[in-house]
Length: 95
Image (cartoon, rainbow, N blue to C red):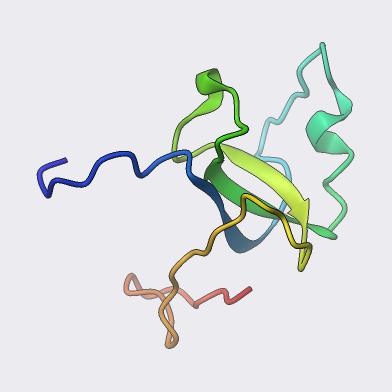
């Protein structure tokens, strides 16, 4: 990067406070239809990014996965939020 930072993607999943739910128009992949849909239950949160265990083809900052909230997951990291709300005007969503 322009700031000299390298290798910042794929080192750990970022927890979010967002419930894992389908995007509009979601269609499950035919080879594994239950991979996502079974977890649209309100008990799972979005984790973004990747980990060392993630397949290389999936490495990108926008990749979404799911995990149960408050579950200790070895490759989970943290996500910074502002205490008074988003700098863009939206509410903060603490986990």
